[in-house]
Amino acid sequence: MYISKKGYKLVYQNTGKNVYQSALVESFRGESFIVKGGNPPHKPSSSGRIWVTDITNKHNRDFFPSVCGLEWIEG
Image (tube, rainbow, N blue to C red; front, side, top):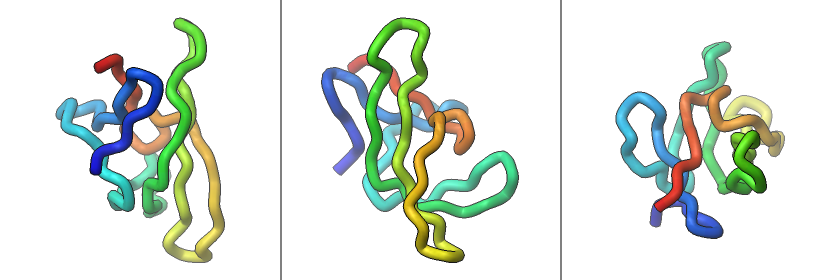
C-alpha cells in the first residue's frame, strides 16, 4: 500500500512514483532508512514530514521529505 494522507500521496521526486510503506530510501548523506509514514503539508509553504526508521541503529526519526528525495503531492 502506498503512503497517502489527507488527499496527498508521498512520491519520489525524480520519478513521481508512489512510495510504499516500508520502502528503503537513502538520504542525501548516504544513510539508509525505512519509510513508515508521515504528515503532508498543512499549508502551501510547508513540505510536510516523513517518518523513518534508521536501518543501522533502529532509531525512529522524522525529516523533511526532500532529505530522502521524496515529496508530498495532491492526489
